[in-house]
Length: 547
Image (cartoon, rainbow, N blue to C red; front, side, top):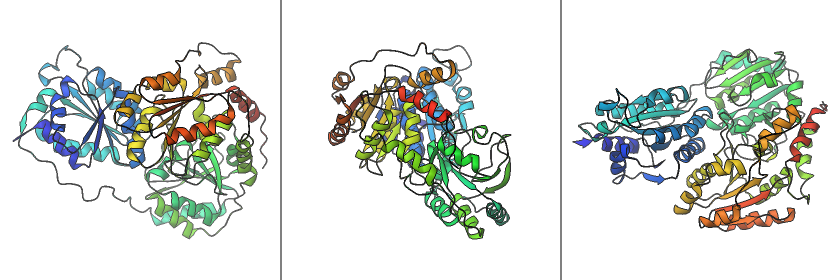
């Protein structure tokens, strides 16, 4: 006989779990005790939201469910933001929360909430363990649902009295196929898509996060090259075709008519590959409903008046692209130089910019210089995210992580910790605003305690910069967006980390080089000139497409 908590941990081990992020509490004492004899490493964090974000980024980078743990009540509710981010950003996560004993759940009771119903709207699966015998099946189901396309969150509530019970069960046999291959698309659908593409005058590919999740980036590039069709990427698909590739148009999703939008204006057929609608609503790129849409994905298209399909090709994305390319007969014009070149020049023009505070373009130019192609940039959410999505030159998938489904502030620091744990041999840098940084800056202590070396670049403007930008665009004035910041260098040093303040434009590059070489947690405080936000808005407002 064993306890239900011990069985639960054996089941997690059986699913390949190596790390759990979380905080211990009274109602998960039995689980925490069982972990002492487990191969699973428990990462004790400083806030449950940080634990959820760490699990979120782990799931996104690996395709295997990240796991986070909290106690009942406030511990569980603190998981919600990071868990919802993972679910909407299509990252597999299994969240576990302790719960009060089943003997007191029928009445008003200290810290007890109906956690299953709380998590139900933001998860793929939300269940409570009401009998210890169901643990093997429920754990398997949670991981299966979380990791199945489209992935997301699974939540398990574990009452404390159930966890302490004895049980005569064992974990289910390990899965022989951890990542089953999606079936091939029907041949008639493949031929239909190829015929539509052959008949197109100006086809355009929009690659979404599903390309990254299904490891279909190489197939996408080969498809684009064979048919000579330009590719736009959503924020979360950055790198699925290298920025430097001549058919890459850059990122789409900025809520303005950017140069890449000119490609959509011209297109008569849009080939959506692994497209998650939550990232960039079709009414933004298909307002007149006048284009033919081909949907290539493992799952059905979302219903939307601006996303009516001419053809839906459901199946393994890579094999679908290969099949369509084999059937298609026309090589298209594929002109992108007059669009792509404009964005490239826009960044290069700021390489030697000496303005201070620093312009976003200059910061991103220097950041790219110090990072290898497979190093990882984690973007927090704010005005800086829009500049990163638009201008950061990403060459490989999953090397520029942007939350753009739920788009929650505060993901930067915990996300960087998780990324460095996942890929310890790569440099990991997070770019965060001063507002987003302070939401989870306490996790610096976690990184220091576990000796996880990350660089935290803070774009410092003492304001909610993105909201200021929106206020300026809509009303021509701002309000209630300013605050004061601590001395970020001293703040870093108070944790035993290192801190640098960039005092001039030409100091940024050597400071970043030093920060990466320091091999510890480093804060780089960069005063940013966000007057460039409105300059960009005005520029795009006057944009006349060159094609």
